[in-house]
Structure formats: C-alpha cells, structure tokens
Amino acid sequence: AHERAPSESTRSVLMRTMAELRELHTLSRHDGYVRRLSASPDGRRVVAVTDTNYSTVWDVDEGVPLFLLDAHEDVVKDAAFSPDTPMIATAALDATVRLWSSVAGRALRTLRGSTAGFSALQWAKASGQLVTASVVGEVRVWDVESGAALSTFDSGVVGIQWSDLSPNGDLIEIVKKGSVSIFGLRTGAPVHEFVVTSAPLNRVRFLGDVTRLLWWNRS
Image (cartoon, rainbow, N blue to C red; front, top):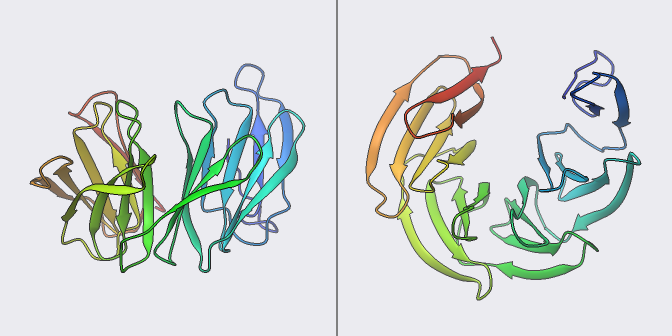
C-alpha cells in the first residue's frame, strides 16, 4: 500500500497486511520522492527508486534498509527484481543498466550501448531477458548473461515515462504523458495508440491478457 501525507509527500512507503489492513512498517529514510517500487518474488524485500543516483533495498519483515545500490552517475529511473534469479536491475539517465545481487547488493555487471538515458525497464518472465526503454524512444531486449543487446527498435516516442510488458511477453506498452502506445516486442511494429487523457498518467498496466489495459492519472 502506498500512502501520501501532507508533510511527507511520497518520501515514505507504508506497508500493510492485506488480510488485516494493519500497518507493518513505514520505510521513511529516503532522500527524495519515492517514484517506483518493486518487490522480490517472495515478497520479503522491496527496492525503492527515488530522485537520486541510487536505490534502496528494504527488508519488509523488519522494516529496515539492507543496502544501497549505488553506482550510477545520474538519476535512477526504474528498478526491478528478476522473477527467477537473485538479481535486481536498475536503469538510469547515465545510459547504463546495472545488475546487482539481490542477496548482498553486490554489483554484477553493467549493460551499455545506448547513447540516451533509460527511463523504464521490465523483466520478461517467459525468457528471463531484460527489456529497457530510453528517454528518446529506443526499446532494447538484453541477454543479461552476456550483456548483449538481442534486438533494438525505435518506437518514435520521445519522453517515455513508463513501460510494461504483456503477460505473454509479446507486446510492450509505452506511456508518455496522456498517451499509451503499444508495439510488438519482437517486431517493433506499432499495434495501437490510445490518447486517454490530458492529465499525466500515473501508471498503465495490462490486465490479465493482452485485450485490456488499466490506467490511472492524477485527476
């Protein structure tokens, strides 16, 4: 659960149990707004992305920070736990994607090749590959073991804020302010564009399959 308070804005993360809706911990030692959160597959850890060049990994049960993922030279825009390996990926405006041990916080490797900063990333659950989107619209699929880019296409969407993969990994949706563009991940071919609102979108998600989208904004 994510709660805003007038004095704290979005600098804190409030953890609640879904069954009893009682507060567990407030994770409040952040140096900037909490922009994004990602939970480990077992739900025992979360990584918080703020307006800084590092991310913080927290122990959910104890409510304490475990370690910082601190190596980027510019603001980190996204982070996510791997669904099947003990790794965390972070993407930043310094045009690098870094892979970390989710157990010890140790840096594993750095993915390079883009000339622009990254604004979003996702793990493809079916393949274990990493998918990134840059601020100038470039979408890349990476092999995390070799660090090689397997495929690249230009979406033409400049100023990407968010992206998300369909459950089957065939489609990627890209969010820019009030519009959502969907592309085939393997082909880069455009599928559809929704101009959904004049207000900035907070997030867009595929719902269960590839036929429905859920979106919400500040209004």
